[in-house]
Amino acid sequence: MMVSRFFGSLFSGPSPDSEQGTDSEPLSDNERIAVSLSELQGTVRLAGRDLPTSISSQLRQIEDILEPLPKYMSEHGASTEQQVLLEAIIGDYIATPLKKYLAASEQDRLEGSSATALFSEQLVLLFSTAQDLNLQIRSGAITELATYARFLNDKFEPSMLSGGSL
Image (cartoon, rainbow, N blue to C red):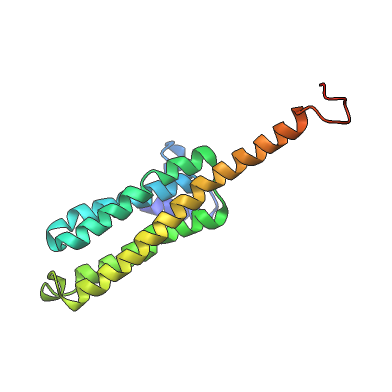
């Protein structure tokens, strides 16, 4: 199987997997974000016994804010900047410090340790950022709705030019 892949790639032939129909379509941005979030949630669950209660609680609060966003964004849209920020929060800003924290010694992961305090401060900032992002994404839809309402009002409101009638 591996040899056929190698020779197939040399001669630009289709891979054996594509012949068998096992290739799937690439994920959309929002689907990829949802998968990343699910992986992060799994990491937090698996690390549960290694995390102080306060850290675990903070991570769950951030997850609660972020979890509905990929679906909301796919249904209502979001800017590229908002998608990039959400992806960075999930894939880097939370995941990287979490991995570093879990790699620290057991002593450093105790409640009240300096490492726990530092990680907790980072999570407070991330919680605030997640709340702001959630508000931005949802207010974008509200802003669009208000713009549409103004358009309809301008279009269908009786004007002085038409003598007050439609």
